[in-house]
Image 1: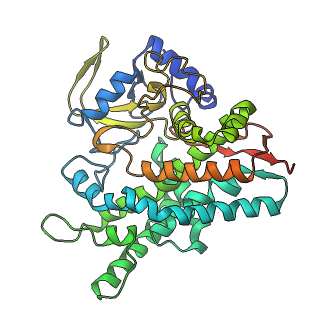
Image 2: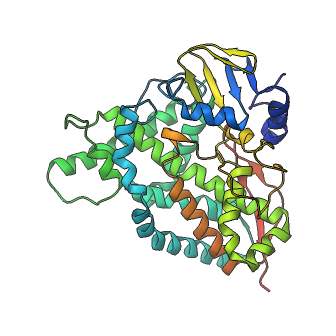
Length: 391
């Protein structure tokens, strides 16, 4: 089977390729990338791989190329320790403290949309600025630097999925330099005993190894980069995908406006049907026999969340966006020890955004499908033209 996640037809409609994988090739080898990689797509296989971190390791990165283990992109005990350091920034109490901040920003963006005229780009005017302002604020990035940061964030994701990342090297170097200065500045303030904000940047800057020493700068920087990129790219796509699918079928949008109790179900169905991260990679530590295929040791394996979410043995009628689907765990935030740290914040931002939109802009109309974002392992709309009707 000649399938690759970056083939033009699969990029255009990943679900069509997922059906082929699920039905005909549950363990697929892709030779159209260097290094070649295998893909797991069935729900049970994906779940088992995500839980079995001894066999499917993150030690050499979760992208398609082998990278040095750094920060939380590694195996326990380092991953467990660093995750614990930043976990308290995402606990329910912390999320409730963020709620008024997110709500105020959401309403401010809607105010700007209303003043700006009836037609707007939903990505640029709403879905992008909402999460990027929030995560940047948590990490002390000045508002004046947001546009630069967003560009660098996009570059970082593009480089992660590129067979040859060298075209992105200059932008990456600029991003690393900026973030190193950002980290060192906070560490210097801490070392001087001066007062610092009780924020996520402080948690990372003051992170300690079990022996009490500061976490090395490369690991702390890796954690910052992961939080910054993950905290905006995926939530932007979640909000954009959600509104795109609901407006594609106006009856769904109207049903949601009439019954806001369906908002949680709409968010989870969007995550299932259109996961912002189509899948991530693991690295085998031993050979694996699965469905009559041998996956060798020390190769990359693409854990295909999006295909698992369309496995009809688990999700009946998987290609339909259903507001009343029975609750079943989807794979869009991963599973096990590497479950997405920012999942509570992504869900909170999507919930607040959708509630505000149906209350203040209930008469939205899709003007076209827009265009998808570029990285092959991510899924979202880079452009989404929408009109609001003042009736």
